[in-house]
Structures are given as C-alpha cells and as structure tokens.
Length: 413
Figure 1 (cartoon, rainbow, N blue to C red):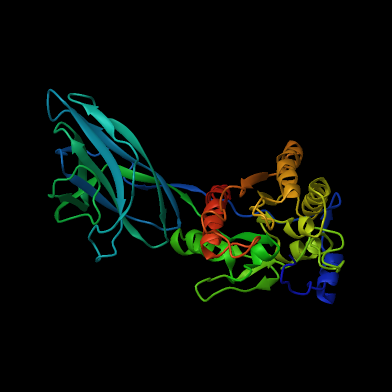
Figure 2 (figure 1 turned 90 degrees about the horizontal axis):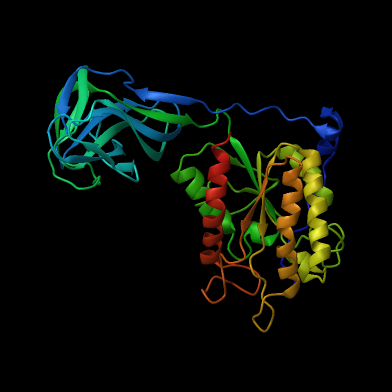
C-alpha cells in the first residue's frame, strides 16, 4: 500500500548559501551552547523561632512567588514532634495555586507521593518532600504541609508574612484547598525549583506520513504539544520545514514527509527520501531533540528488514555529522499489518535491529535512546485507520509514549 505523500522539499538557494557559510569544527557543524537551567530555593530557608502545632487533619500553607518558569522538585520544611509525648504524626507536602482569587490557596497542583512519619518528642530538623510540579513565571503558589494523622507535629513561623490554616479535616491533600483561616507569620518552608531553559528547546518530529498525520492532520503531534507545552508550560519550540495540523495544535511545524523512505528509490521516486535532505533541514532548524519514526515506506516498497536497518544506521550517522550534540530518540515502528492481519515479517527484523544500532552510537558518546512503539497501538484495540496508519486514538497513544522521554530530555537543558 503506497502512502499518500507530498512532493519532496527542495533545497533552496538560500539554504545552499547558508550551508556554505556555516562554521565547522573538525568537520562537524558548530552549534552554540544552549543556556542551562538553574536551581533556585524559593521561600524561607532559615529557621523561625515560633513553633506552631500542626494537628492531625489540618493543613498549613505559605505563599511564595515564582519568578521564572520551571519545575518544583521538592518542598522542605522545618518540623519537630514535640507537641506530644506519644504517637506518630504523618505529614505530606502539597503545592496549591491561586486560580480562585488572589491571596487564597485554591487548586491542587501536586503533592508528595509519600508521607514522612514524625515520632513524638523528635527534635526539630529540615525534612524534604519530593514533588514534581510545573510552575509558570509570575505565579503565586502555596507550599503546604498536610497532617494526615497524629497531633505531635509542629512547624515553625515568625516575622511577617501570609500563612494559613485550613480548618477542614482531611486525610490527603484536597482539591480545592478548602476554607482557610489566615494568620500573620512566615513559615520555615521552601521549594527547590529547577528553572526552564532560558531559550526554547527545539524539538523536531521527523519521519513520514505517521509524523505528518495521515488522515488525521497533526497526528501524534497534536496531543504531544498539548501535554508538553499547553499543559506543562514547557519552553519548547516544535521545528521543521513543513507545517500542518488542526486549530488545536498551537505549533504546527514538523519534518513529517508523507510517502518518504529513509533512502533509495521510494515508490518510484528517488527524491522522496529523508537522508539526502536531512543535512539542509537540520542546518535550518537546529533541533535540540529529534523524534524519529521512519522505515515504514522502505519496508512497504520491498526493502528487507536488514537493509532498512542499514539505511537507518546511515541516516543516524548523517544526523550526528550535521548536529553532533543533538539528542535523538529513535522509535521502533508501530505494527504494519498485512492483508491477513499479521505483522509484516520484515518489520520485525527491522525493529529487532534498532537496539543494536542505538547501542553503537551510545558507545560513541551520542545522546540517543529508543521509544518502543511496537506494542503501544494495535488493530485489536481499534487504534488504526488502515493497515499502516493510526486513527486519532492511536496517534494519542503514540503521543503518550513520546511524552515521558521528551519530558526527561527537556529537564537536562
């Protein structure tokens, strides 16, 4: 089955001039280093003098201001267990926003997965609660301690500031926060934030019609953009020489060339291949991260699994020659079904060869990894539009598979 495809993009005169003017180092394209994220501590990091009881079933919170977008990775609080002589207090941390009005803790943004048990009579010390909460520049959030049991825990406060007690009993962080009684104080509690990169992280979706979004414009890119950018507020720029997708896709750029092979004669057109054009595309877009799902048309036009794997190896080498520091994510292909509803045997061979190719480049110090798409979608689950292409349900499942990998890479910038 031949994919519906667009004509290959031509290398423009401008691109040719750019290629000639670029500075090379040791035969490799020199790319400016991206500004790194930094780690901040937000809130009160010093010990206050006034202990305040944190009774079981109550919450106490401290408002802090977020200057730069990023991720709150932990909440640290100064606590002791000296409100009682027996028993154990269980305490959890949470982060609340202010969408229901200024100066009021409102919606739950996230909480620590586990509680910290504080024994009666235990000495005061800093306790760290792990969280993973995305925050935007200019936000006001509330760092919250939730006592899920016991009455012996104490927090510490002093000076001027906005702290709150919530009088509604709870055994876990609630959403929304609940009715709060305000008091004057500044608690010994702070969040550790890893800020977002100061310049956008460029992500290039690269491949054929499955990247383009055959029959469902935008394909997996629509849901992936929503999760990464719209929901998580990541500073990400999707890049590529093409643009398509629905109105709900805020960044339509991509390098998804419908009907293209990795290399060689493809559906009778020698120009409909990725490798001869990849250097020009990379030179123009300079992606920091590449999401590569490719090989379907090679296999569909009769290339063996082993030969297609060799083409992939050559393509990856070309990518790293152009951009030696790019972070490449290679997908093992989603299933290609034959007329009798079995998976194309050559695809099995191809997918099985990908881990070895990735290991080869990883041993050379390249930042490369695999996303296993082989079992993400299936015909049995109703994820296909035809034998090769997902429907929107299938594309959304692909987005869910890309998402944690891109999120993890994003945090390294």
